[in-house]
Length: 341
Image (cartoon, rainbow, N blue to C red):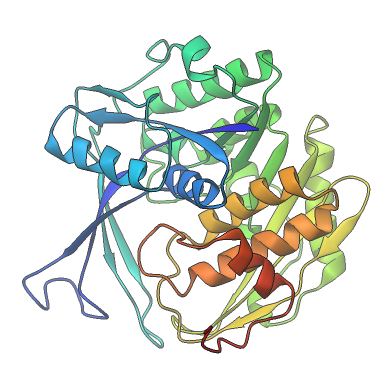
């Protein structure tokens, strides 16, 4: 099984610890971005995964590629050229103060890329599974057109397409609304990943769900997932993540999945003292792709994905530095956090 993920990786600049921006004259520099985070998760799980993006031909682009290689991600399909590396700034919240993200990604290399800039015969060579998100088509008009081209080219080759709808309101500012774009792109998706806001804001599909209430109304999420499947008859399944945010440090985390044959809900994790929740959804997507390709039971795949994402909340940075064994132990009920000797 060969996986290809496609999207923007950025320089991540974070204030130290729980400080506000420039409370200290320093920022911690790492790399991160939705599809790259998925690629790193899959590489850590032992899967054969390549990452496709556009990066500037400079020392920062070189360092980014070296970091991805360190995790075992195949970077041979990354394209270099004009533009700059996008940046996002992160201030980690605590208690009732939420985390804050500031994007600086206009005119990045991938924002300037467009249809015809990728040789899809080369990019999709030996690929069985293609993963994209709703972030890339939100970056720019040309990136949107390239994203649509990518899923069309994947389907022409019989490649399974997964998409995390990932609605980002601060990115949709080039004249197209998210539903205008994502309703078309989703026609080519086999496996969709979303939360309740993504379904509403990206696809315009709603159900009376209130995850913040603290109680999961199973019937409402089943109704929402079925609405998506009814709207997209070629879609095989959709998984909806369920986050209850009590504060910046305390969330509960679960997910559900509808594969047209049955609707299943995962166990719910109580996550207190969150270290870093950025990349949590990407770690879920990576876990689901792994699970669907390694377990016959979709419910087991769902449990693997939720456990993988739960563990990500304990790790600083975008990347989920977790092994299959660690995820399976948590999914199997070992969540005590006791020292392993």
